[in-house]
Length: 244
Image (cartoon, rainbow, N blue to C red; front, side):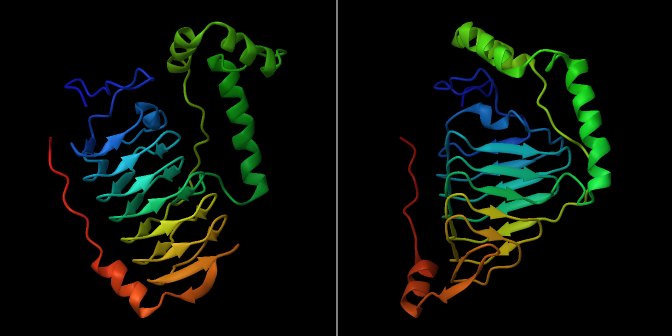
């Protein structure tokens, strides 16, 4: 990261927010991951030693949200929706298209959602994101024809869209050495214990015991890890990364 908090290899002309701590040995592919980042909290995010944050990861943090990502954790194409706190431990593998959400952001009652969607549509028209009487497809096609540089400029100018509602958030905690398979979703208030494995396309709606394999919707325990597997995970160490 450069002194002005840019990434030399970045295709997106953004910056790492001032309240984000990125370890010198961590890898962040693009600052576009912070396009939905709105937290005003001091030390709102920490990305630990040797961790890797690849393309497609989106940090959708609300104004008072905090997120902690431990050491040597890899995330690829994940989305974090956080209004309270999400904690991810060390040596975790978070596969692509996973969603970790400590809030639903909208009420469960249909009658309460309808006025939110109506106000959302009105605000998009007022900002110019949508023009009355104009289809969305021609607008997208026009954006693609201006070339990549101009397209990036337009993307920066547009206000990220979102619905804000008074919905409670419940923190998520993911322990050390956890593997979450692709297309999985971790719902508000869930805790995943050390060494657990979440099967692909699972929905975690409650606590996952340590050293278990869970899968399904909702995720249920498939089996316990054997003693040898548990000990290997508990004693797993990786040599420290030495600066070059």
